Image (cartoon, rainbow, N blue to C red; front, side, top):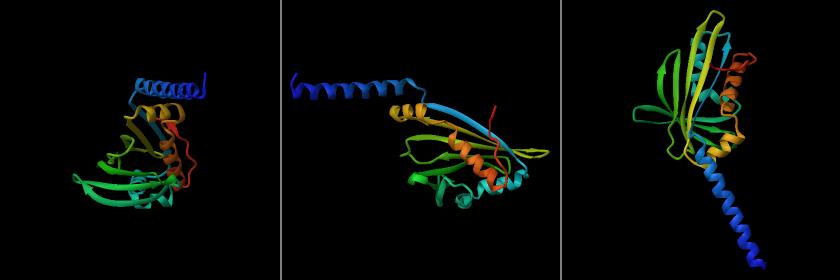
Length: 178
């Protein structure tokens, strides 16, 4: 086999691998749900103040570099967060029931994924239980494949809850909500 034959073979193998990866990605579920929670020795009103003071999230969450208020869309507050690595995400407040429920939904049509975070704050005798449920969907089969095999679907929930606990001077004991 000459050099041209080897080039064709290599290209064929690469195309075959790419097609296989796309097919595997197409077979994986588009949507996922992940939930985590923790208890913080603070009243729900104080926790509500912290989690809804979006502008100041970078002061306590090390993954968030900047938060900007954008013009409302369809009557909803829009915030753009900049994360480590330069990743940007536009988030809309789609539900707000102080001090117990907040829903933030991805408001960027160009995002590789869609979904929301549902925050629930439950008052307890010893403080409050903060639970976050991520409901997401990944349309692109290659990104879905990478997400499924190389990421923990709850990793960002866990990072957020650890940072929130630290904001209140506590060590996080993050649990699977359920």
